[in-house]
Image (cartoon, rainbow, N blue to C red; front, side, top):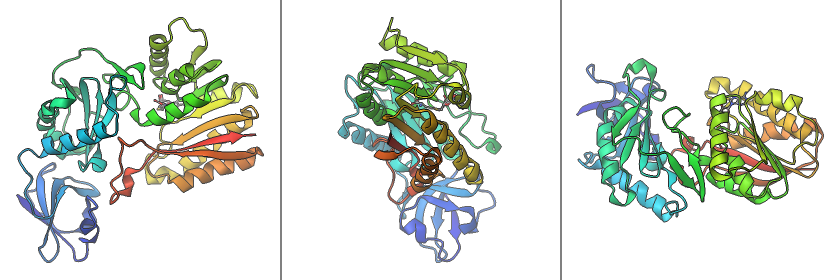
Length: 392
Ligand code: SAH
């Protein structure tokens, strides 16, 4: 295995178990090292720091293991089985709940890898060339965790791998085939479209927040903005909402929402989907039309360079909701931008509240659920932030 040597003192974050080696920390890089290759990382004085996948870019190595031990032959099986045991212990695997995140990258000590499970199908996303090259090993290991009963493994990395690496990953089944796509979350059924949908097909990270929303839905008029698959809408329907309107600018998303409402509440006239732009919908709608609004937009700031505009986007969006929501209304507002910290998001929402002149109280501060764990050494793993607000 090739060895990468760091500059003096650049080992400190690794000794604190942060799994990334930045390119600027590297003193010597072997000429012939290839993207995706397993490499050993040593300090300036030659001490073994860990083993990981090399890649071209600002994060040059994602460490899979610390110290000088070799990577065992059944490494993926061990890590995946540990991830599965944790989800089992969290009570996420039940007759009435069979979708969950099995691997959340660094949070499961598998940097560069995301796996969501929908019933007997696992959807695998590689974010690093190293994980791309290991995909068959990962797929086989998934089917070997006997308790997980995974029969199909779909690989979906066309949009997550670095484009410049020219890996030409094809979205396809690595093992098994399509054998149905209905998953159950807290007793509600969802069509998961991993073939054409965004990310792995469903946002499992909002599961607990959707459950909380259900508790507030009774007798309320609900607006679910950026609805995608209609997750929040389906929970609001079960919670006893008077009326639910779902909005998404994508007609594909609107169709998915309609299908999920029909699946759970056939012939129920309380729900309507609107395939329009969220800002246009908010501008056109009347005041006091809704007393429960959900704002769960896509990441407005995908990179640090977009932070300023992203925060302006969150402020404007929330200001519109404050302007229109009925008195005594409840607003569920989210940001999934990793570069937007909890404090920044809260400040953007506070600014919107101040501008609107409404009296606003924070009822809950929300985050990502336990199947999206954050390695305490890797705070970058935290991304989802939410506020539940009472608006007078
Ligand atoms: N709340 C969803 C996830 C939202 S993902 C859930 O619980 O699953 C973000 C969604 O916003 C996507 O479906 C995307 O199509 C939609 N979207 C992006 N820009 C939009 C806009 N300007 N107006 C309305 N919808 C938009």
